[in-house]
Image (spheres, rainbow, N blue to C red):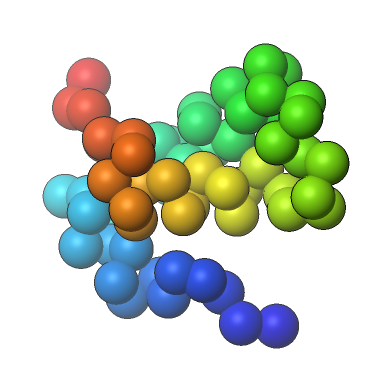
Length: 63
């Protein structure tokens, strides 16, 4: 199984791996809770969150 987008390219969107992990997890939880119709195509919330961050649709904010 290949990860799309690749982790080495996705990590460039965050200051550190920890920030990326937290951002992806938070977004995936939001997708799972609110956007039920996005899950119809069989894509997991984590995959959707990673793609959104990589494509710039979601920004990683510093807390």
